[in-house]
Length: 599
Image (cartoon, rainbow, N blue to C red; front, side, top):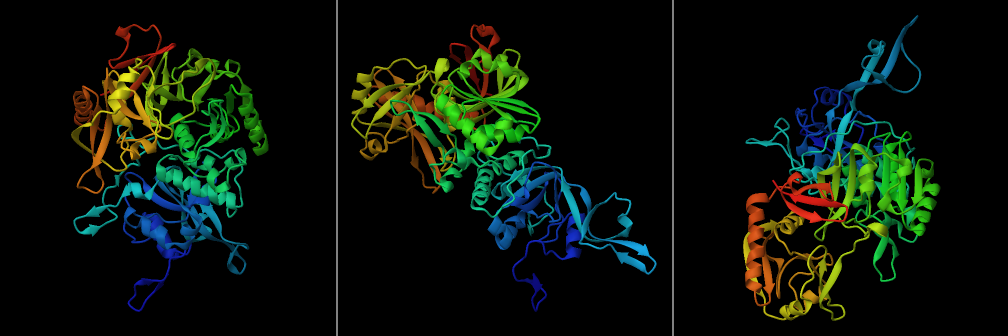
């Protein structure tokens, strides 16, 4: 930038062209490179880097001064390089001064002379540091996590923006309140060479995908970011357009059964990143993946490194052949073992495992998964509980599993000995307008009576509880499933809502309380606030009003007693006496007793 006639900065900033004196001053204190005000170290110092700089999960050295939260967005928007190549925001809790960039001198017969060659970087503790003419200072980011700028509230005081106030961090929707911030990951060397052609179409798409994963809160640690920037996932789905393959929310279905039900897929990058973050995989670990596809196994191999081991298994030979082809094409076959077998039994020949990651929906936890998991190991599994599936990170504690994180998810159902699909009770079967109850461990309903009830007038009840437009209801729904005895999910096609048969339509289903010949389902309506919706219930049948009132009462109970809380889930072996279980809703399965409890 240059100065105008009044001495104020003018022109567009150029990445890497900070004035040397300003660079040294802002790096040394540290200060914001935009406003030159001190940035506090409490909560972490914010640095911006181009996405291509994050080539591996090791310590990152940077000569780019930090920015304050007030001016971080401005720095991104006004810097052409960051806008063109994408950026990553890093919050560092350990970023000591590493060294200096400049020119080394020596004393010769004719006085001081510079060494031939270009500028070097010299560590601060180098014995020749006194012969170095420093142009810039370098900091080493040793412990840091990836953050999204929208989740960092600017620091303000009564007199306006300031870089000296304490930080206030607003977490992303995927960082659930009550679970605490994830620990900073200590960086380790990368194990796989990165694509050096950062300008290629594929790498740009990977970088864009990673940026979106960061924005969604799915990729939070540097090692996960590095893994997702590396694996060429599009090679696993050659029939899918390149842009689609790198869509953070796109799951590519690779096989259906005879009835048209999806039985194999390459999960969406967001879900894969979420589960890998839940697993907390470290280099050198042994990891079992149940439900293969190839891409996720490659990500796991990136996380475990050359000293680790990944075993991926699937019951379907077609699936494991595709996974093998992908792993061979991409070179990950050297560190990933593919097994064709029923995942219910695990892979005992390679046990024990530090981590087990299940990528199919399971209704139960087989004994093999627990016995093959090392003591203190983590099992990440999409577990279906009373019709609702959540990706749960469990920690093994003896013969029981204790939850350490719960995330909303959707996966294809498990096949083989562990298969346990949901049942359907169809209430309306007109083509394109189908409405049905999805039943898990719920009692069989009087389907004829509920069909008749659907044609009766609505009985609406409103709870007075409001939510934001983008606010997830996943924890409310799990609370309702815990508190109410007979709460299946009502799934409906959009045309059913358009015809006025139901007020809410969802392919997954909305919680629906059933009582004999009557039922009531959760719904919402707009309020006077443009981004607030009131929750309520719509009932049908002879007791529709009363059933709706019961559902609304539990919504109010959640808002009063548990809003902001997260469910605690434990898995105990079948046959465990009630006296040894925590209080809560007990779900009986063939192998286990699952307990959902709330603070």
